[in-house]
Amino acid sequence: MKNIFNIKTLAAAVLIAGMGTSCIEDDQNNNFADKPEMTVAGLTNLSIAEGETTTVTLNLEYPYKETVDFKLELTSGGSNDDYFVSDVDGNDVGATTAEDGYGAKGYKITFPVNSTTVSFDITATKDMLAEDTETLGFTLRSTGSGLGSGVRNFNLDVTNYATDNFGMILDWSGAVSYKVLDSNVAGTDADDEEIVEDHDGCDMADFDAYLTSFDAYAFTGNCPEFLIETVDPNTLATSALADGTYTIEIDYWDWSPLGFEEADEELISDFSFPMELTISKVGKFNATLDLSSLYFFTDDKSNISGSGVKVAATIDVVGGKYTVYDANGDLVAAE
Ligand SMILES: [Ca+2]
Ligand SMILES: [Ca+2]
Image (tube, rainbow, N blue to C red; front, side):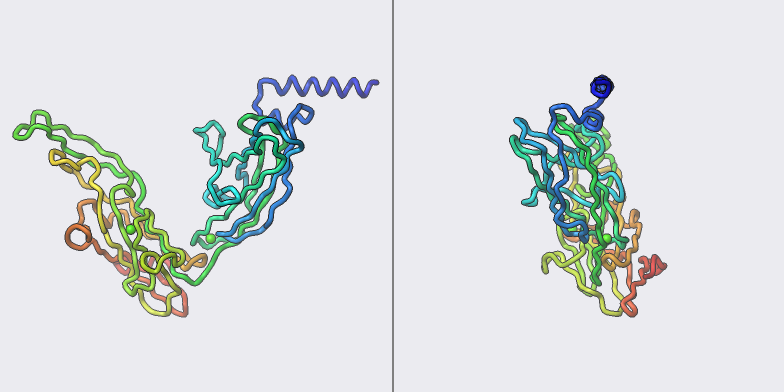
């Protein structure tokens, strides 16, 4: 009798303590409420290489009359750039942000109505950085409607993707700011107005990058240009570099005059692109060059007038090992 009484008292105390706190804490403490418990049934792969996928299956204790939501969050061992989540058909699912009211970035995983199982895919990002094996630690907990219970953790080992391919990222994303003169009435400056325009470098221009030997090139409309393997022989291709000296050129191909498209709008200040070039032997060696003063917006563009081509770096390959120099011939990094 005494024991039963104590258990009831304890349960009541937990219930009261849980009131007014978040659903997440409620789920952690409250196993007797009418909330089906979620468990991790398993992962198809406990260890994957960058670029590979594992399928995670969750079970629910019993089918429920409404959808039951859980949030998947990376809680240790890496960053949110290291993976992405999709449904088992490869479609994006449920990415959450703090702005959605879900706290730190994660993914909402939903059991459909009257369902006791749900599966989703985690794919490790295939990057060109040289890294050791990382163990990503994930946590699943009730969110949204808060109709489920159970806090579950699981780990996923991610091994580095490496090849002998030449890889590069040419990135000119980031904030740029400039002034435009808006003069509506011709012949008078009475209504002239200076307007500050703020945009992202990606929206203002298209750059390409390539080895002058054409052993590797990135001629797409993407920003950044990202080359890690041959995707299209016409626009995005690479290979392992034989011993020799290689020159990397960048081509300012085209621009977008945002804020001064009209005849009565005039650009009155220039800016340089926040440009950075990362060179790699994929997964084995990286060097990064700050090119933030290489290109100004008003420089010549190959698709419009003149030539937008400038040398960005050279690479000496000796015995398969890279040594990278900037356009002045100064050493940047050696493998
Ligand atoms: Ca890597
Ligand atoms: Ca391009």
